Amino acid sequence: MNVTQATSRRSGRVVRALAGLALISLALGVGLSGCSNNSSSSSSSSSSSSNMGWSAGVQVDTRSEALLSVSCASTSFCVAVDVPVSAISGPASARAIVYNGSAWSAPALVSPHTALLAVSCPTASFCAALGTGGRAFTYDGITWRAYEHVDEHGTIDAVSCATPRFCAAADDNGGVLTWNGRAWSAVRRLAPGVQMGGVSCPSTSFCMAVDLYGAFIFNGKSWSTLELLGNPTDPTTGEPVAVSCTSSSFCVAIGDSGGVFTFRNGTWSTEPSVDTYQGGSAQLFGVSCASPSFCLAIDQEAIQYLTFNGSTWTKPIQMTPPVPGGLQSVSCPSASFCVAVDTENHAFYWRA
Image (cartoon, rainbow, N blue to C red; front, side, top):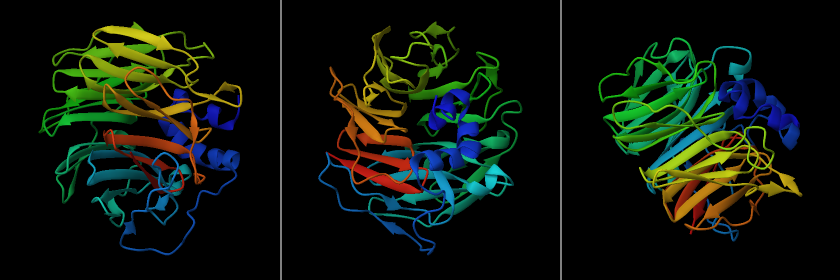
C-alpha cells in the first residue's frame, strides 16, 4: 500500500484531509503551498485545453489551504470549500470560494474553528457545508449561518441537498442526518463505527448513502438496511467511497480500487477494474453524474479521469496539463460542464 492509498477515504476523509495533506504532497512531489503567494480578489477562468475539454488549473486560493469539496448548481454558480494546512497541528479556519461563471471570489471566512469537508448547492441561493466539530453551515447567496453541535460523535464528511429545504449528510461514524429547511435532525447511526463514503439525494424522497461495505436508501421517511456491494477486499473493485444519483432509478458508486457499482431500477451491478493505472488498479475518489447518460469520475492517485455515456466507461485518461495536487472532488451540473478541485487550491474546468 502506498502513501496515498493509506490516507484514502477508507480511513476517513478527515484523516486524509488533515494529516494526509503532507503525505499526498510528498507522494506527488509537490508542496502544500500554492504556486503564488500574491493575494487577489478573484481568479479568472482559464481557457480550455485541448485534452477532452479540460482547462489548465486556476489557483483560486493563494493561501496555504487545500480545496476538499466543490458543488455546482449550474455552469454559472459553484462553491468550493477548503481546509487550512494549519488544521494539521492547530485551529482551523474554514473558508468558501464562489464561482460566478467567469471568476472565483476571494475566499470568505465561514468559521474560525472548523475545517469544511463537504458542500452541496442545489441552487445559487442555497448551499450547505459541513465538517469537523459537529458544525454545519448554510449559505443564502450572501452570508453563511452556523449551526452548532449537529453531530456530537462524528465528523461530517459528505452532504447532498436536493432543495434548499432538504439535505442529507453522513459522517465518519456511520451516522446520517437530514435538513428540513430550518434545522438539522438528530443523527441516526446506520452503521456505528463505520466510515460513510458519500451520500446523494436527487429528490426529497430518495437518497443513496454508501459506506465501506455497501449502500443504504432513504425513501423520504426512513433509511433501509445495508445492501452489500461487492467485496471490500476485492482488488478489482474496492470499498465504495462516493456515490452520485440522478434519480431514484439511477446511481453510480465508485470503489477505491477502480471498480464501479451501478444502480438501475432497484438493482445493483458491478463492473471491476474500470479504473487502472500502469497495469494495476488505481484509486477512484469522486464521481458526478449529470444524467443517466453522463458521469465523470476522478482518480486522486493517478490524476486521471473517466467518463460514462450511459452504457460504457472510457478508458482512464490522464489529465493534462499536469495537476499540481491530488484530485479531491468533482461536480458536473450538466453533461457539458464539470469542475474539479485539488489539494493545491486549483480548480479545473471540463467543457464538452
